[in-house]
Image 1 (tube, rainbow, N blue to C red):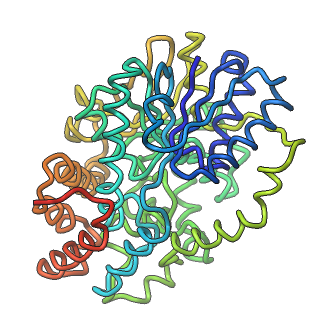
Image 2 (image 1 turned 180 degrees about the horizontal axis):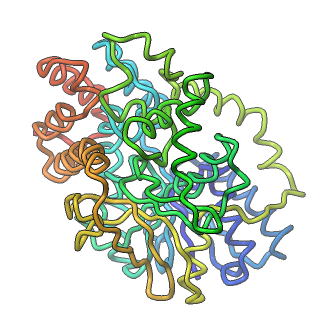
Length: 440
């Protein structure tokens, strides 16, 4: 097996995914190709993974590094699996730009990497890079399975699935921890079963449609009662999603700091008191980036220069997917795939949806879900509109579709006039010009 990791300078995440592979008997003798454009970060990941390989795997994996665009094809050549974890433009300057320019127009964000104007711009600067990966893969590893972990998940995976020949599955942590996090937050962890749940929708807004205990009893009546009581009695980190349970009837997969900006309800200049009421962390992602940079400076030696470093297999999907393909042993995931054949019947077929999937030697097989409750499909559509228009903008390179995506973004449209939206988009395109193709 050959496993290629794109964006291998993401050292902590590379440890989880590739360390997991080294802890998996079917994968532990793989050739591991590490690719990045940052020489220092690439070397740090190589050192770290070399220690894990020696201590956990008796050195059975063959680890090779590939630096820069000129070596990208060689990194991909003959790969069976390609893991994608890139970030185009980084925190400084691109994330800073994504937050600071909208602030000039009084548009506030929390995370800005999946939807909203921040998610749109991140997609537009990332899609051209991922398309270049795809063209190389079509040439040198046409049968590889591309495992995308980069956000905005639905836009990037959707583009790859519609406009390239690369077999692509989008993967997100939020499905794996959804039920566990909900039940633990409500003091119901004793009822966690893990087998009796159904989650479907779109990435970061997939819905926990059904959840039952080991005896098959519906847990939602108690969940709804406890969530409403907790929101009324205390401040906590998940108030927006608990409000979803109260107002829409169901819990969704991604965190409240994310979901607070995916709609027109909570971050509103006319109702500033809602920020405190729902405990919404404005500018959360820039703060998180700064903290991660500071933490990495303190902790890098414990990973990079630790010859005694070991690893235990995590719950990340990647190694389990690879193992299922290699061994033909079935494994169930929540994956992001095109809605071909109406997997979710009341969402568009060209949308990228998040549904249960079975993985085995044949690859990834999405499962038919049926219809979502109409209010949940409507919520998903407010996000899908933006996703499809952003993909259209990237494919056609027409600036008007970037305007359309921003105009139909629920949070942006609820706060700004059309004229200000267009001015803001033009300013963002100009600021990001080094990372974007020329838009007509």
